[in-house]
Length: 134
Ligand SMILES: [Zn+2]
Image (cartoon, rainbow, N blue to C red; front, side):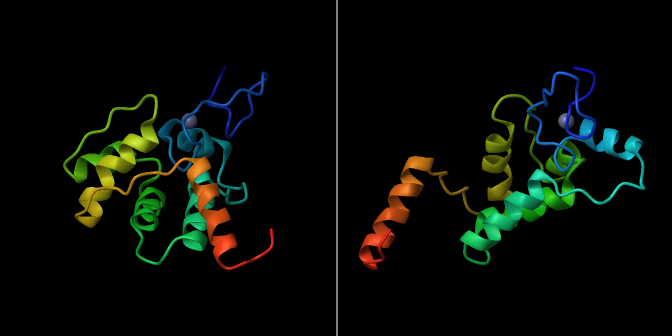
């Protein structure tokens, strides 16, 4: 692997599990090197924020967190330190970052993340209760 594979695809097609230019300083650097004449990219954070804004209530901790991510993409370690916390990179980074950052931004613990199965069950229950045919 020569780079992280998000900005410049690697020969083997492998991408680092870093979240891409919106989250990863290395990818942000690659994007900057790729030149300012490229069209603005939709990052993972943009997509997550859009999903959060469509599915959650305004002011939800995850919307606040996503906005923070978007504002601080490419300098996450500094931004985290500015909040008085430190989150080591590595496996599960985004989950650990969320758990540490949300309380600082909202004064409350980060809500539990539901599994896909739980989410789908919720959707099904809601559909049933409204007697909406699926
Ligand atoms: Zn990267």
